[in-house]
Length: 396
Ligand code: PLP
Image (cartoon, rainbow, N blue to C red; front, top):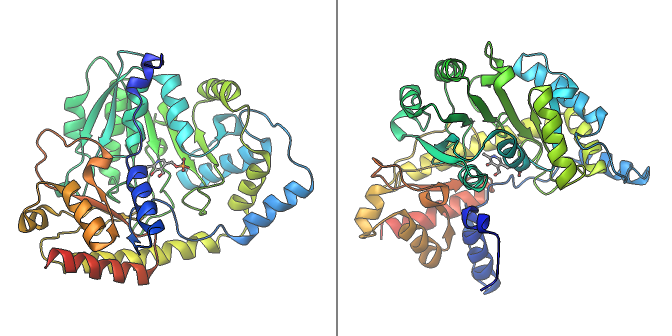
């Protein structure tokens, strides 16, 4: 037995990577798989952003930078967040980190102690629950239900709050459902956070991938900026997942601590990547806008296609690039016990990769329906072919 630290027992992972590994294995064996499993834009990073990185490299911008991020990027992010959230944000409230994920890790390290309770969306991005447990805090799932278009119920959030609650994690637009929290419900959660003196970690990584209405951040509401950490970044908006560039916006005092975690962990985020980030925020914006329009067309295509398959019921999500169809009846028709079994059947017999609900946390206590997640960050041709394969399996 290797003598490892006990805390590793509390560290979770993203089960999506297991399905992705299986897909890659099957493809290496020569199978053609249509994959709806990947959570990243299939577009390439816009040229102007790549050129900015190349130019920075040529200027030898390859040295250490400040742990909180280069001043020029913190300034650009502060301006962007001030504009899009309608609140004054100064550069000392911004910490640049390698991707959106470190905001979750560093944010929870900085805010949650053992014994604290942290509310998080379920189904949800699996890293929330993993890191909550890892820092020794207690995860308390907020059930997201289909009847509320996978948004939270503020009354239920109120019932989950105890004297030990420290932080609420929100994610809108939401992975894995594409759900968006309506402004009235955000206001109700803000009221609870103020009344119970709670922090909010607002994961807004999909804020620009929105198909209807304006984006609303809880940080914009009165008395909320001082208790909110906004997570945002470049991965999804600018198709920059591999660059590793994201940021947190938070009260300046907390920002100095998160920057100190950064000093202890990474020293700083890659310098020339940050300079590309400045170009992303301040340069030509037609790339991201075109991407959102394409996602909208694909959303309509995949939702209509799924709803025409026997046993599948799919809502039309308002944001992100995921659909989360209800496949309860499909499982029943095929005599399958759950969505995991359906995911396996689709992969091994249908050559289509989706993710089961279980990749996004354990079923809530009163949850009896079955769901899978499909990412439509793939071409329309793939979507059409994938839908054909799903239909063939489900209507056989
Ligand atoms: N938050 C959510 C809800 C996500 O879906 C993801 C990525 O899939 C992230 C955060 C992490 O983004 P990044 O790749 O920038 O670390």
